[in-house]
Length: 132
Image 1 (cartoon, rainbow, N blue to C red):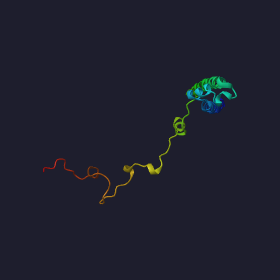
Image 2: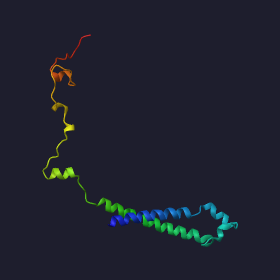
Image 3: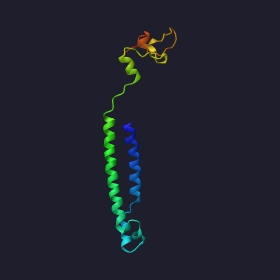
Image 4: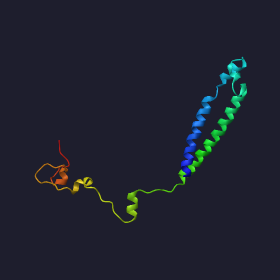
C-alpha cells in the first residue's frame, strides 16, 4: 500500500518538476527585461518569477530525491519471492519433464539404417591415423 502511494507521488513530483523547469526562462531572457521588454509585466514582477520558480523547483527536486530513496529502501527490503518450482522442490515434489524434452539417448536406435549417432557410438571401427 505504501509502495503504491510512493509510486504515485513519484509520478506527480516528476510531472511537477518537468512543468516548472519548462516554465523557467533562460539567462538570455533576463536581458530583455532590462531594456523594457514585456517580461517585466509578468504576474510575479520582473524578478519575482525567477525566485519563486527556482525555489519551488528546488523544493520539488528535494522531495523527488527523498521519494526515490524511500522507494529504493522498500524495494531493497522486500521479501524474496520464490518460484512455484522452487516451492515444489522444497516440499519434496519433483517436477516432471515434458515428453518433448526427452534426451536423444533415450530413443531406440534402428539397426541397419543411417542414424545420427557417430560411428564410434554405433560400434564401427574408425581409424585414428590415416597415412597419406
